[in-house]
Length: 312
Image (cartoon, rainbow, N blue to C red; front, side, top):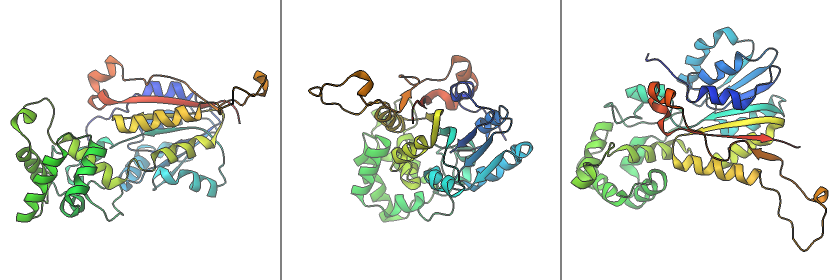
């Protein structure tokens, strides 16, 4: 296993402002790097860790075995966190963390089908219990469905060219592997695009992955639910890896930290005016330090935002 670096770990722990007796939620457990650092600061506190990838749960159970008295592992999407926590009679938390996107093990295990660096069957499921796979998307979506997906989730300017290339190839035979898909993408694009910096399949793979795992459709609602669980003084930290995610997080945080509209024609004293229940800790997202970028390539596109509940 390659050495693992948790993205923006120092910044995350500092911003969470850990209460040693608090209850914390890690909605995206992965290899448990962030959780381990939180657990190290807890005395009588505890953690509830979610991940819809069973491999991540099993791996982290081994890594975090020394903390088993303080931690509960839940093999579910963090979308269900509030419902599950309420069922456990947990109605308030001191903080939460979301490290969005694909974890390093998912990218590094070629057989999962997330990466264009390895040849494997098209899969891309974070939760292997679900039926929809990348194979189904690539081979069964209509031309229009593919175009919409590539534009919406990949911001791919050449969406129609790639969708047409996929459509033509499947008339001959199904596209079964990651390398076959990469080959179709390359054949669909003009040389001026292929000569640009970066892998030509990056945005297509991102779009398919987001579609397969339904990563964005419920993200805003999930963030609102987690924020509603925060105690006064509790904080939420969210790390994103592309502009689509960051835009959603920014909009939700801005909504929560904006006071309700007051008609300027109604005379009110400042003490009578409603105020927002949350404040954004960093107006601009934090990015990884120069030192981290030198050792952790995954941090290059990372953006971190933090919100605090200031009144109930």
